[in-house]
Length: 478
Image (cartoon, rainbow, N blue to C red; front, side):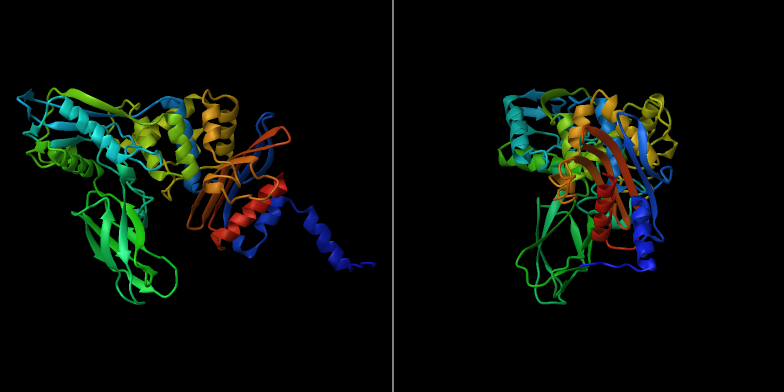
C-alpha cells in the first residue's frame, strides 16, 4: 500500500522531528505560563548535553532535600548518630530521687520513629529499667524534657498555613518523638453530616479538635488538619467519604517535648515509679523563669541509626521532618553572635560550607531543609554542578548516591519511568506541590553518568499529566 503526503503534512512531520525535546516539552498550551529550568550534564566529561534557562531560580519542592541531605553527610559524617540522654539531678536516697528526671535531646528525628523502626514502647521500657537500676522508686520532682539544643521555632516562618498541623508539615524540635505525628480516627455517617471523632493514636487528651468536616458521597478526601506549634487547638476542614466505620487522617503533635515528658511519666507510674511533679519541658520552664541548670548525672543514652541510613530514609520517603532536623543540626556548627533561628543558622552554614568549596551559592534561597516553603529557590545549573561534585569528588559519594531511590523501582519514584528503558537506571529525587514538579539526580546508561535537573513551575495541567510529560522528556534525552 502506498502512502502519499501533501506538502503541508510533510512540512509538519519534518518540523516535528527537527524540534528539540525541550521545544516539544514546551509546546502544549498548558505550558504557556510555565517557568522551567533544565540541565543535563555528562558528569565524567564535565560537558553540558542539554540546557534551558538553567540559571532561572525556581521552586524546587522536595528536590531541596538533595542539598540538605548531601550537606549533612559531608558536614556531620556518615557515621554520625543523634544521642538522647536520660539524666537526673539531686540526690538518690532510700529509693527516693530528691530531684528531677531529664530527657536531654539532641534533635534526633528518629526517636520512636516508625520509618526508622524505632519502637517507642521499647525505648521507654529501657529508660525505666535504668531508672530502677539506679534504685529510684519515687521522684520528688518531675520528668523534664530538655529540648534547649534548638530554639522554639518548630516550623519555618515561610511555611504555608495549609501545611501547618498536617502529617507532612510537622515541626522539628530539640526533642522529637514518634515522628511528631498522631493518627486521628473518625466515624462517618450519611452524606452531608458531621463525622464523629473517635480517638487519636497516641492518646492526646489535651488537644481540642474544632470539627468543621462534612461527609460526601464519593471517595474523595479533601480533609485538612491545621494548627500552630504549641497550640492545643486543631481545626478540621474539608470533606471525607460517608459511611465509614473507621476513617483515618494524620496530623502533627503540637508540642513533642512536652508530650514525651508526659508519655514517660505515664509509663513510669504504670511501672510503679511514682513521680510527684507534673511533666514539663524547657520551653515552659524558661518562659516562666523557672529553668535552673544544676549538675546532672547520666542514667542511660539512646542512640539513633547512623546518618547514612537516616539520609536514605529521608530521600526514599521524602521525609520533610527528618530533613528539617538535619538542617538545624548543621546549624549547630555555625558559631556566631548573630540573633538567628536554628533554621537560619543551618542555612548560613550550608552556604558558607559550599562557598568555601568553590560553589556560587547566590542562587540558593533556602528557608527550610525540606523544600516545603514556596520561597525556596534553586537553579538547574547549581543542582547539576552540585550533583556532579557529589558523584566525582565527595568523600560520602556512595552513601549519597544510594540514598536516591531508583526510578521505576522504589521510594517516591517507584512509578516514575516504570516499564521504560530507564527503569532502574536513574536515581532521582522528586519534588511536587501545587503547580510545581521537579526531578533531579543521576541517569546511568551505556557506561555514562549524567546529572540531571528538571524544575517546572506554574504549569496549568494536572500533576499526572506533567509527570508523564517529564517522563517523555527524559526518555527523549536518553
